[in-house]
Image (cartoon, rainbow, N blue to C red; front, side, top):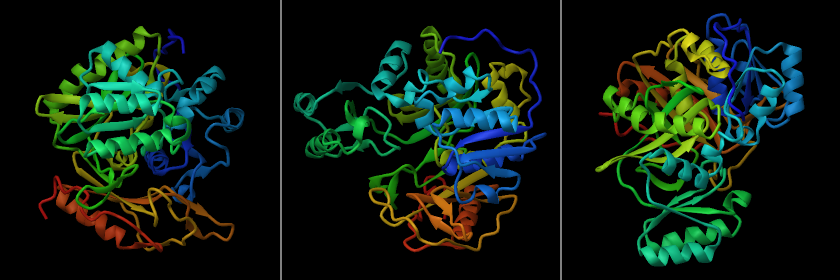
Length: 438
């Protein structure tokens, strides 16, 4: 998308919002935005089985990539701001089309979304920006990939190039496991996402996620969060979209966040601008803190899931105006975003068979009563015509709690999870083990 020079000197009225997406991230965004000052209505499309339970939130049966349907809805509902949650509609250029229709959109255009939609594109941009990241090889055939493996003679990280819902990465522990992962990607498991492959040298160290709200020129960093990708306790089992998270992650203090800004985010934004990309949305930097310094594992073009669910309860009532300012290219016009100085803990409840073959259609039994410091966010759920709530995806629900320390926050989250049940419910019992004393 061409760079825009139209940046308003003050923010227009903001009362009605549309959140695009159906997952836990969008459920949390809608909840947080509805709590913001001056917001009257928040619509979510297509939403999930918990959307209508959020006070002041409505549900629209429009697909994430139905551009004409989205534009018609925005016009009829007089929407002031569209917030696009998932990566797929961003990569498909939905934000571009909505902007052409005159709408304010928080979320990058298709070109900027390449940060996530193509790992090869992202690696090339990192090299141009001088951003620290692992050595990599981009290959288009299994034979080429195996040739690289034969040359380096060490286990590698295997990544499908395109979007694979957070599941297209294998951190192999052996050369044999690397070869198996290469064959799996090129066998078609990830469809078009696996037509090209990125092999990376393995890095060692703790991982942390940093989210920057961007208006194309300026950046506002949120507290760092730490996700838990593996399915089972002890960080074992297959990779998932994320089984829980916590924030703020003490891995990065104020000086560490400033280093991320200077070494990673500002050079990335400057390189996007050099390429003529006016990036308005979230830049998500997935980092590894190695013995030799921080390294970027990946970029995403949206809020993380479940990190978003973890962070939203910490956001002040200025969040909606801040996202609007990013969408309009004038972050300096936004009010200061207040962030609560508390610990936030998130535990995900997944369906039986997740991540490979999640079972759907199990009835939810929810006794949990949300409160000021306890939230229940729906993800893979749906409502029947009779009003029953059923599982409808891999990650079903997230219970989130805030407290003055992580022990209490996680204790409250797990107590909340005890009040949620469906057949085959699966969750980790050690989320936040890095920061829990008990």
